Every structure is written in C-alpha cells, then in structure tokens.
Length: 266
Image (cartoon, rainbow, N blue to C red; front, top):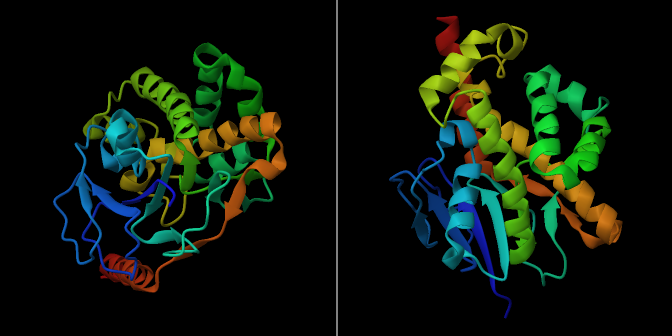
C-alpha cells in the first residue's frame, strides 16, 4: 500500500462529499465543523489565509515534516481531482490540468490582477533562485498555467517546490512591506486600487479578492517550477489530472454569490 497523504484545505465548515479514503486529511487553521469521517488537522495559521489561500496549509505541512508521507498532495474543500476516492497507483507527479489562455501569462495576469507584481517576483527569482530564472521567463510567455495549487508530489519534490515558492513570496511580502499582515495588505491594495480594483469587473473588483495576492502569484510560480521539472525530466514525467467541483459546494458558492448580488441591488 502506498504511503500517501492528500490534504483537503478548508477555511469554512466542511460538508461531507462522500470521500472516505483514509489517505485524505482535512486541514484548517479555523475551528470548523466537520461532517465527514476524515481526520481534521489543525494548523497554526502562521500565514494568513486571507492573503495566502491554500498556501497557508501547504506552508504548515512543509514546516512540519512529520505530516508528510512518501507522496504529499493538496486539494480544496470544493475542488478535487476527478478520481476522488479512487486514488491511482502513483508513479509520477500529478498536477491539475493546465488552463490555456489566448493571452500569455503576463497579459492574462495583468488583466485579472496587477502585472507588475508578476514581473517583480520574476526579477526576484534572479536574486534568490537564479537557476529558476529562465523558466520563470518562459512562464511569462507561455499561454498555459497550472491552476489551484493542487498536486500530488513525491516528498522530495514537494519540499523543493515549497522552498522555491516560499523563498520568493516571503521576500516579496517583505519588499511590499505587508509583512504577512492583512490590514497592511488591504492598505497596499488601496494605495494601488487603480491597478488592482478599479480596472476589474466582478468578482475581481474587491479589495478582499485582490488581497489573495500570494495565492494568485503562487500559481504562476508553481507553473515555472514545473516548466523547469519538465525541461530536466521530459514531458511524460508528470500527469495532468482533471479537477471536479463538488455539486454541493458549487451550489453553496453560487447561492452566496447570488445573495451578494441581490444585496448590492437593494
């Protein structure tokens, strides 16, 4: 039997979606209700989920190697790989199927967020992880990116990925003087609101959405990491896997969005 742990990132109460494979573990830094049979791991929330999204839990597992297995995976409370309970025999890294855009990653990012941030972390790669620079540059020009920070990786590769992404993003956090403080992030977004908020349409035009800055940047750095991996190991050495959104959680999110729209109209 394979030694694998797949963590389900939760920041709100967890609805049972029928997963009972014991390799899945819930992980949250919040006091959430768990209606499933899955074990719940309580993390420390050192990185604020409102800025770091699922990276909050990825960082915690990285810094607590006793929580790692031979294979380490992450998915979300409402997004799962489409095999769900039937985890396959793992022979190579699994990542979420690429999103393909008519625009390159820089333009695509700038449409939804603030492109200068992506250029800044690319420049920082030269200073901090120079051997990744050419692959981060390739990522900017690519029309593909790996979404959601979802994966199942061998332990060694998981740790290498975390070192790359967190070394860059924590340095970026210090450079923009947010220092992992949510109020400072909101202030930062407000100071550059014409770049983050005012140019965007719903649902991207809120301070709270754009404050998830590190989560958005990490998807592009994750992509750069795997461009390097594929270059060194060959394109058949990873498996792209489709992602499903569970009906129950999808409907809950959809209903919440409709309620928010009604409140705005009143």
